[in-house]
Length: 124
Image 1 (cartoon, helix red, strand yellow):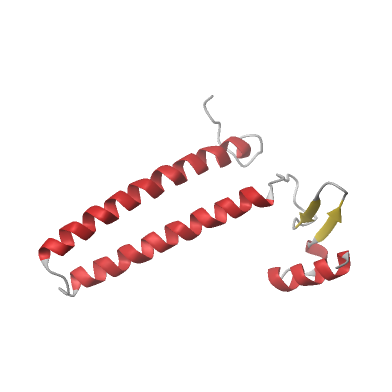
Image 2 (tube, rainbow, N blue to C red; image 1 turned 120 degrees about the horizontal axis):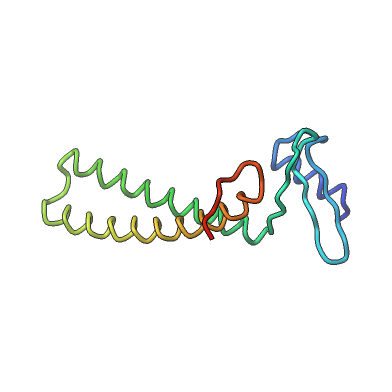
């Protein structure tokens, strides 16, 4: 697959116009540049880190969806009280786990953003 094939596939996936995407390849790494001409600061992020962030977001979406379903069942009185209590404890544990994970991820992202004009000062 050549560079033009990669570019066509990525354009189709991203929905971005041709001038908003460029792909460079060295013997060591492929760089996909989705910045625009007016972007004055760029942070290079590995595909692995981006994938981790996307997986974390997907996990939180699933937990929020589950909580929505649980609240709907409670609202419509479709669960017995003892089951509601048990499910609430499980959801609470899940929320606390995801909150800790996302806070750690956010701290790492904020440390990177602190090096740009978009970030807040991060205490060392």
